[in-house]
Length: 185
Image (cartoon, rainbow, N blue to C red; front, top):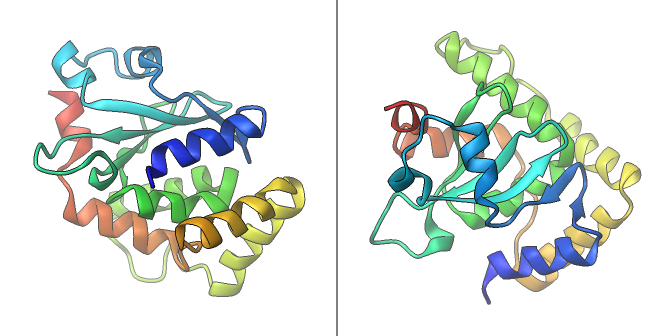
């Protein structure tokens, strides 16, 4: 099953919304507006997915010519360009982050501070499993269709929410090329 199309269909069936995100699939204007310094060749390697109301968004970064689209890393481009980084190694990892909904922005910001301060022990990303589960529960309460989304994610794709979004983010950050430097050159 093409998981990108699965997500597009699900989002379009929910009035183009998913929690605090809106579908912007393949709308190149997002890339050009957010990353004005990118040349056309680099812009073609980014495929927009979802945007939050602040013009921060996720995009597929098709940097690896030998990988299928859904095996490419996903980048998070924050409206003020901070953080601007790889956030998932592939589409499955990205889908496992979505149950955290609009709180993803806050979680990624915590990781950004954590990395800027050279990974201080027990600082910024030390949320407990219960606190992380509560974020998912709060998202499902605020956006009732997220409960259905999470069930479909599990039943139709076999993907469950990541137990630790920080670990997913850092795994991508540590194993993929540096998106910030790539986009800045």
